[in-house]
Image (cartoon, rainbow, N blue to C red; front, side, top):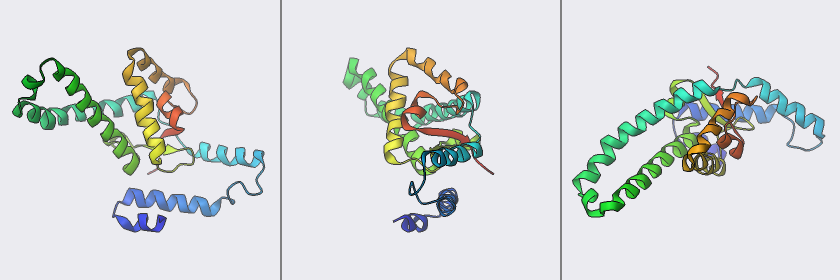
Length: 191
């Protein structure tokens, strides 16, 4: 199945990530067979030392670029559709709620799909950042849903939880709450 994923498309970044994963698997020992806890810790520490974690301000600017782009796309694509269909007048007082739900789905779909398939949103790509799992691979669907769904919904649902983004500045691995939930990391991409 993994071979099919490599041949499926001509995405150089995904191909390069899959090749790196394969090389890392070839170099490493068999998973957990014959490894004691100390060797596992040393192996994890080795991978952690190779990473350069993205700090608060780099992630802030990447997110700001994504937000600006999403708002522009929303105004260009979704706004005219809602106006042309007279949905604003048909829904009356419910229009605000409907608009909020459509925007939230659009926002979630962008972050989830870009993170799953490319390992970064456009804002992160511009700043040379990438979202990886603990092992340094692309996130699985479960991890993406936890990171972008559960983690960001917590941040977005309660205004006071926005302050939890500041954890990125104070943790050694530069993880926000949504990163901790999914056990993911935002790192500088190797060039």
